Length: 120
Image 1 (spheres, rainbow, N blue to C red):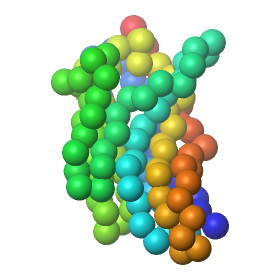
Image 2 (tube, rainbow, N blue to C red):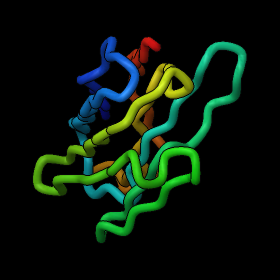
Image 3 (cartoon, rainbow, N blue to C red):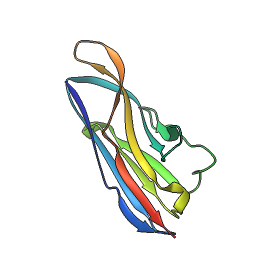
Image 4 (cartoon, rainbow, N blue to C red):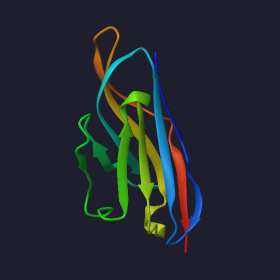
């Protein structure tokens, strides 16, 4: 049906950078908002960044100025550039897409998650 595949996670030192990618594929008619969430052990999943189809981005204060979300609509791909990483950014990062399938059903889809670990 629809798949979201993330890549780009890993281990980085404090102050370093990582770039995450998430490609959506399958029976997709259109994609509305795409977003990144993260979840650290023992915490709830939280929004990290979101971007509309038109390119309007939104960030919580915790990452504003450090993270940048972007998307390539032709490739159904969303990116997350993460700079000035600190240990509090350590979490599993999940890609999310609100999309309409070729059956004209709109729903949220999630990737499998990619681990980001920031060492101090």
